Amino acid sequence: MPGIQDLTGKTAVVTGGGSGIGAGMSRRFAQRGMRVVVADIDLDAAGKLAESLRSGGAEAVAVEVDVSDRGSLEALAQASLAAFGEVDVLCNNAGVFLGGKMADFTPGDWDWVMSVNLMGVVHGCSVFRDHFTARGSGQIVNTASIGGFAADPGCAPYTTSKFAVVGYSEALRRDLEPEGVGVSILCPGPVATGIDRCDRLRPASAGESAVSSKAAVPVIEQGMHPDEVGDLVVRGIASNAIYVFTHKELAPMFEQRITDLRAALEDTPAASGSAVTPEDLA
Image (cartoon, rainbow, N blue to C red; front, top):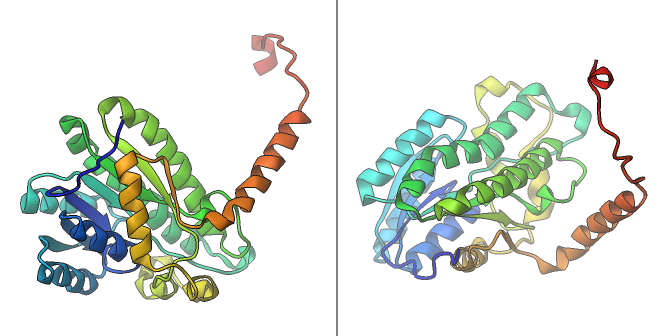
């Protein structure tokens, strides 16, 4: 599959589009002549960005969405199709972060992070899937993280969710390829976003916790500008890249993982080849 080289006149839906990486993608899409649906749980932020895009000559609308709620994403799909008639690019980008010691994360912390970072992606893909497959074209971009390949201390729910996004997206890519639909996995390193302020979005159902999104400050304060990430995503869409990375200098993290995997495999005895009997399973 060649991807989508010419984005002019096409429509992009971006969740978490009101700020950070989502805003960077939205701006770059608009500059490429796309119509943009800026979707965010913070409708005020989404509305301001959509207005800015319109003032620059683009077609853009803002839609409030809570990606942890499948029904909210179904409403987003309906609003997007009502506004522009079709969707060509879907960016499941909304995400939250909490940092702290493993023992300090509460069940509510885990539920919230997974409901947004993982299930938000799953909901988005499943809701828009039929639209893409019916047309036999389109590109899905799911935001994971460099943390979806290398576990960092102090952010277990976040890392777990991003590993899951990578696995889900790889499986989805294989599933949708025969349908003519591409899937790319965005894997950012440090980016200057507002993810350190996502505590304000924590739902009451998650309860109180000793951990906080402010732990992300040291990582993002010297991060890449979100618009640069948008440029990389545009390039990834054009080639239907399976992975879109932002920081080449982080390659040693992957090299160590590959080295560890290879060593473990080389140390594994060959399978005996003997058949499993019903008695073995009893």
